Every structure is written in structure tokens, then in C-alpha cells.
Length: 71
Image (cartoon, rainbow, N blue to C red; front, side, top):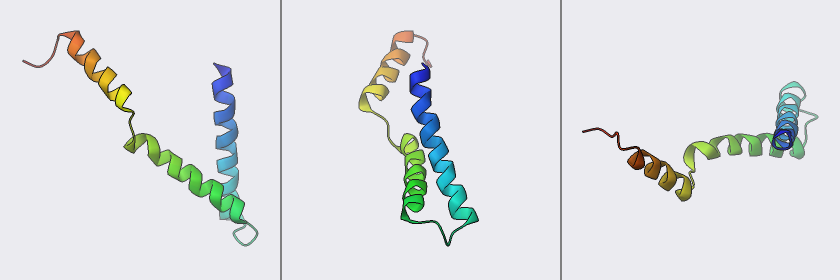
């Protein structure tokens, strides 16, 4: 389980570094910081707007298998 958290923490730390660098020293920040900050912001929107068809089908199947739906 810790193996999944390490990359997420590293990517999160890199994103915060890029955002803080852009805010504190915009004249010295380069294209790398801008790309990391913009990419992280773009990825933050992805889970809200994208859902795998397999996930939505499985959740519908679970709800219908429960048998306690609205009358």
C-alpha cells in the first residue's frame, strides 16, 4: 500500500514546489515550473469529468443487485 503513496507524494511535492516558485519568484521561474503547475492543475480536473465505462457499469450493477431501489 505504501508503494502507491510514494509516487503520489513525490508528484504532489513537485507540483507544490512549482506553484510556490511561480508565486514567489515569477521572474526566475522557467518553463518547467509552468508546465508542472499547469499539468497538475489539468490532472486535478480529470477525475471530475472522466469516468471509466467499466466503473459506471459496475456501480449500476451493484445498485440493481441490492434490490432496495426506489418504488
